[in-house]
Image 1: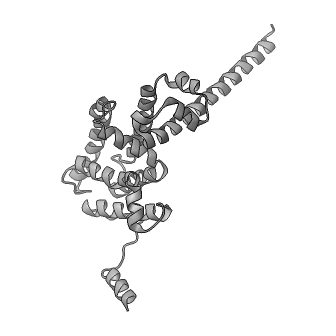
Image 2 (image 1 turned 30 degrees about the vertical axis):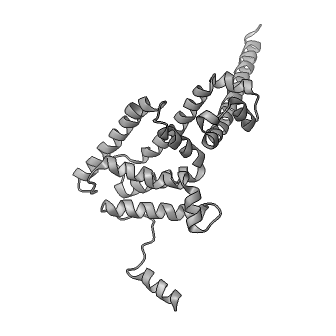
Image 3 (image 1 turned 90 degrees about the horizontal axis):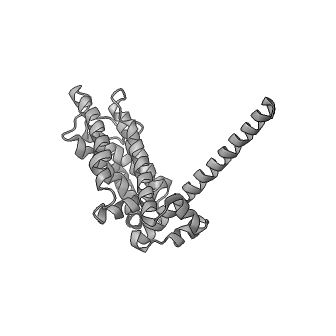
Length: 241
């Protein structure tokens, strides 16, 4: 085989490997998305590999090929969820303005609740079970990431750029305020008198969370309209009249 023919064959092999890799990635993502929905709806105990395969539109054998067991698939779903959540914290870095960084983080968390509500429900369910598969993650990977972000916030505080009594509890409050819009969406929608939470409700949630958190830290919320003092009272009075 001459060098030109050999190069052509090598290129074809590379192309086939790329296509195969893409197919595997697509299938893996389809399985993870379907599994997230099934685990959120049925819980770990009620979910089956056959049910997840049907939801993914793939043969059951594919699930075992990619993940082996239901427990391994469940662990992969949790890892996928937490990776996305942890990546959102990348907004919190020393060189950024605290108000902008925290606002970006809060809005990213709200957006995750809007786009991936089932993921939050799977995580909440795991916590309710005592986190049997996440104890090591919580004690190491999550704690390390939180420690790193706490160090950033403490640095801002030393510079007089933010007022935070306890940075760890600040992060806990952000998690609670944002994830509730995924975990308790039905309750919130009922109280708001809407069928489901839509873009307007999530935008209002983001504005409210940003305003409350940032003003509590002595910061001015970026990009949030600030009503004039007494404007709400004037609106209510005009409505009544």
